[in-house]
Length: 325
Image (cartoon, rainbow, N blue to C red):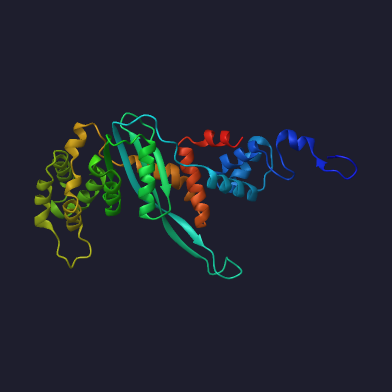
């Protein structure tokens, strides 16, 4: 440390040359901390940093910097310069563990543990394999807005045809129509429909013939013959008094969503009929970090981590750190 004159300002040449504040962390080290903190528990991240770089970093410092940069990073990239002729869009929700501190001076007492829905959406052009993700812990309205922004980033224009996929949750279908209106058509995930039919099969046919019956109903659906599937289910609908009624559930599920069963049209256009992309996204974007065994998140911290994880999935990592220089 140097001084300008006997009582002048202090100078730290090393700190000035390396960009490090006294008792602070360089931009490069922050990037390393956030990199590991985004993928592992903060304690594990500290172990990895020491293992790879030989540097001991406090766990709390890793936590603070990871959440700080999670709040700052933009999860959705800029609008695509290339207009998409056809967009594939999907939306789904997954539950993450959240903790709410108690109201007293000691927040550990009377804390509440509960599950909160994190909503993940994606959009990609039909001729690409890299989707753009968006995520939120907010309301269905917030998720709808994020979905629209993701679609624009993926190349949505007024001339774009939009193909939506999902499990048929009413709020998802409603938000799809709010965002894409006459530009799009929504299709029920074929494998969700098949699960309903598989559960109904033992009540419809004799034991040992369930698989054969299921395959026949799947073939009918793929040929847009849902009316035949419903006709086959109808005689076996259970009494309303029964608690378990798989045939009634399958019949109701299909009847209420008959305008979302155009599998033949989707296959003719070489569009997907399953929503596996967004379900896979839940695992590698959200659940891998926010559902670590034994971890419960404050809601504000969950927002930051969700933002960071989504930005990394959208390949915004390098761009963000270059913008910090």
